[in-house]
Image 1 (cartoon, rainbow, N blue to C red):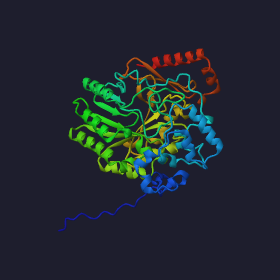
Image 2: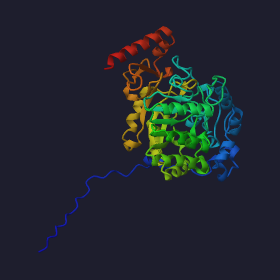
Image 3: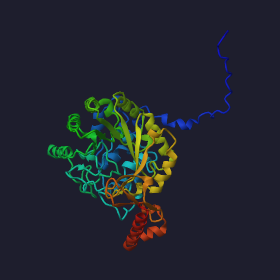
Length: 461
């Protein structure tokens, strides 16, 4: 007698999802080919040269005249004059890689999201917020030794140098990064064996320090031997369990990961040694717009991925750059496509000379609703406010009080600085005319701040 079970007839599929909308796969469409040759200055540059990190570094533009000369014929004389005046008021000096310059749409430079981040225009600048401070995050106030900020209980920020492959307009360290400008005399954080030694001594002396961020400036600018020296020194400390090398390099000069074998090999050795010691060593990078991710980026980060190096991204929320659900959503999906984990989106710090880039806190809250659920949770960034005054990174939703009329939000940081209150201020031009008028009066400013603080105190448990 057969004991086989009767075959069950499969139920028909009652409901199917409609065919996928091709636009939802846009994150896979990466710019490829010799796109740089549309720039007159690079018309004759072949692929081998353009993908050489040494060629990129040698041809990086470091003054306004050369920058505008490179796009001569692509922009109007009015744009040139606008940019010249914009740079005179900028807190950051000029440094733009050929790769980055080639990604800008020079047929529409006023609206291009990459131009907005790197080339200031006089016509778009806005007055700084009256509550702005050059070192708004008080990194120097929390620095026990020069170039080492110890704010969080178990984490420190090490700034071994003060240069980057490019200089971003929105840099929160405009007080130190790059050379002096007409607007800012910089704090000196140049490479120094003695300064590094003092930083190592402090880290080793604090048993609670387990997590070290190596930034700058930018870790891309470290020589391979320097990168390995820092890694070896920190891995040798029993208390250090995690370290992160922070760099914007993959977004603005990805070819370094393709052609600078000594640098990538040094990073790989530090990562591998950390893994053998059961310590985490990762790379943190900084993409702000999906246009910054090209086929070259994918190849470069693929090489990093093959070596088992984990990469996280931190974006800065900027007006007319990534402040719409469509752009932010595409950025998040494209990062995941090239094996980079979106980690943070920072509400723009109060930085001198870039009020036109800042958004309201409400914008961040709005965007977070659209991004969450569009992809896996581990590929969904947290929107944060790096609280002015040294409160550290606070989830954008965690304010104790937020007055959208005055633009004042109040945060607390119980694990960082218990009992203190930290205020963030929306850009004035995004407020009502009545609120803008109140901000012109110092007495009214004081009243608005006092009211916000009182409401926040009433909310705190």
